[in-house]
Image 1 (cartoon, helix red, strand yellow):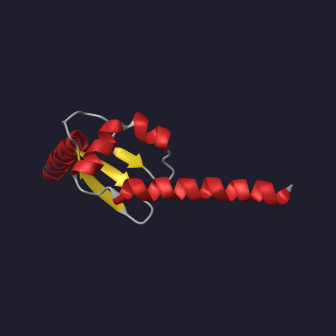
Image 2: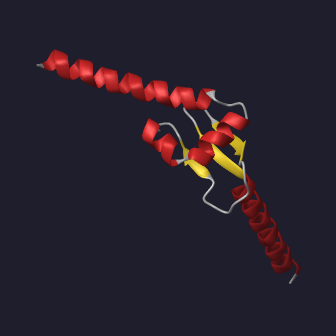
Length: 100
């Protein structure tokens, strides 16, 4: 009986922590690591964002994430993805030009 009660209480605790994190933080996956970025306004939404392949359009569609990253002084995350995508775009253009 004690084991079931302990498991139940532990499950409630894990669920409460999960709700708190998803309301107040974004879990952002960048090229090197995972960052915990505080949200501007608390709202319950899926907190995980993988920004490794984000384009300018993705940043425009996720303005609350962009503002949260800027407010937390982690703008290098946005620059890193933008520069990486531009480099990939230019590389593909060069490959298509050299292949013709």
